[in-house]
Length: 424
Ligand code: C5P
Image (tube, rainbow, N blue to C red):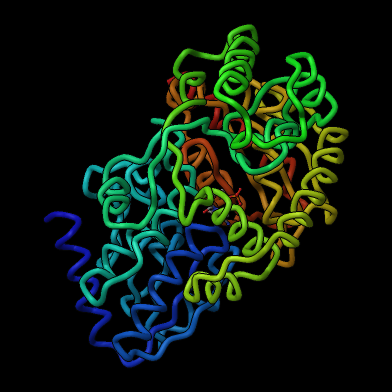
C-alpha cells in the first residue's frame, strides 16, 4: 500500500468522528500540522480541541474515550497508544500502530522527504483543501531542506501546491536584517568564528568595506559576491566539506516576500515558551506578528549559551552539560546543537534540564558521526527506557525524559550505546 492510500484510510477514520482531540508537538512542525488539522476539522464540522505539548503526557494515553489525532509525536509511544487514535508522526520508528502514517514504513525518509505537517496535510487533503504553505513552514522549521539544500520528496510535491515562492539566494536566515546580525545569528549553516560573535561579524564586514548595518537584500551584486566568497574561504580554511559549503547558496522559500524560516522560527519560539495554542490560531488566521517574541527568544538563547559554555564537560566519548532549572527544557536541545556547531565539537553533546516530570535529556551529534552510522534516536530510546523513562527523535537530534538523579547513569548507558553503534 502507498502512503497516499494510507492517508486516505486515516481520513476515513477521522470523518466518522464526532469529536477529535488534536495533540501536537510544541514546534513549528507540530504547530502547523495542528493548524492544518484544526482548520480541516472546522471546515467539515467536526468538533475538536487542540493541545500543543512538549511530550506525550501519560494522561493523553490513558484518556482513551477521546479520539486523538497525534501530530509530530506518538511514534515513541506506539505500544501505549490505543486504537482510538491516529498518528501522523515522521519520527523514526521500527514498529507500527494500526492507524499511523509513518513515512519510514513506505521507504521514505522522515527527516528529509516529509515532516509531520506534511503528513497531516496528506490526510487533510482527503477531507478538505488544506493550506500547503503551512505544511512547508513546518517542513522548513524541521530543517527538512538542510541535507540537500532544498526540499525533496513529498515536501517537493506539497511545495508545488503551495503559494511559497522558490528563489535562489544565500541560504542564511535574516536576509532583511542588518548583515552583522544575519551572519552572527546564522546557525544552519553557521560561520565559524562569527557565529554568536557580533563584534567579529562587524569586523568581518568592515574589512571588506561593507556597511555592516545594511541588509543582504540591500547589498549590490558585487557586495554579495564578496561576502559569499569570504564566507566560503573561512569554511574551507576550517575544513568544512565541499558538500556542506555549497549548501550556503541555493533554494530559499518565501511567503509574501518573507523567508519561510522566519515564520517557522516564530512558531518554534512560541511553542517552546508555552504559547503553542496561540501559534495555531495565528497559522489559521494567517496573521504572523511576533517580533517581540523573537527578540525575547534571542536574548534568552544568548544567556543560555553563555551558561552552557561554562558548564560543558567531557564524559568518555561524549560531551554534556546540565542546565538545571535555569535553561528551559524545551530549548536545551537547541543550545546543545548550537554548542556543537559553534565549537566544532566532533562528539555527541548531551544536555540535561529539570522539568516537572523529571529530567529532560537532549542529544545532538555532528554529521560525520551520522554518516558513520550513529543513530541518536535509538541510543536515546534504549538509554531512557532502561532508566524507566522515555525518549526518541532523529538520527542527529534526540530527546527524552529520565527520573531525577539518574543523569550519571544516563551518561554511562548513552555513552556505551554510542560507542557500540560506532564500532559495529
Ligand atoms: O527536545 P529536543 O529538541 O532535544 O528533541 C529532539 C527530538 O527528540 C525531537 O524530534 C523530539 O520529538 C524527540 N523527543 C522525544 N521524546 C521526548 C523529547 C524529545 O522523542 N521526551
